[in-house]
Length: 180
Ligand code: HEM
Ligand code: HEM
Image (cartoon, rainbow, N blue to C red):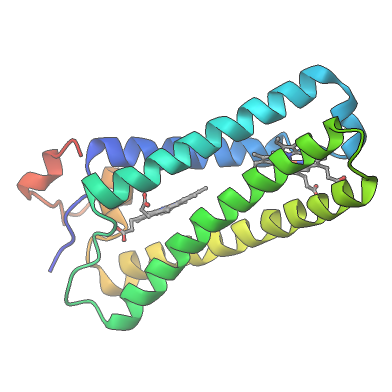
């Protein structure tokens, strides 16, 4: 069975989140001392809060409105479990980065909190900054598995036409037009 595509809004949220995460990695700070610049500190906090709101909203959207996965019901149980685990891991690592970042900002701006707390939070921040790309590799490998091996339309459910081969396979299900 071919997977139904995710709706337009779900895809927009997915790819805007991916672009913002990519941007976050490109502009990452080099050291704690950069937070001495109030403009940098303000920007980091606003960016982290924006990502936090986006990912909380996205989680609620997926859970209550759009539905979490387009994996066909007949897919093996291990695929369902693995994909759910990786999706939850992606959310957890994004929240880990955001919350440790906000913790760093709070600790840095509060003179009573020692440098050891800041150092610990930076360690946590860096831990999640490594876990997220590792999980993303599994996520993309999973998408390619569905594209190249299963050929069940799960990758195309999020990539749309970009993931479709030029020689057909166009899914003409009515859900193709779905906005959700
Ligand atoms: C920073 C980058 C990315 C993040 C944080 C991310 C996160 C997620 C999450 C959490 C889901 C589960 C649905 C949801 O809760 O919205 C999902 C679905 C999906 N993502 Fe990504 N993703 C990223 C990049 C990519 C890339 C590069 C691909 C490449 C093809 C991809 C393909 C998919 C597909 C096909 C689904 C649908 C899976 C299904 O229906 O079961 N994602 N993504
Ligand atoms: C309040 C929010 C944030 C604060 C205060 C903050 C603070 C910091 C600090 C102090 C460092 C330097 C760590 C070191 O000394 O090695 C750092 C590194 C970094 N941060 Fe954040 N951060 C925040 C949010 C984010 C967010 C939302 C992202 C998004 C992905 C992010 C991505 C990075 C990256 C990629 C690095 C470089 C890590 C490395 O090269 O080892 N940060 N951050």
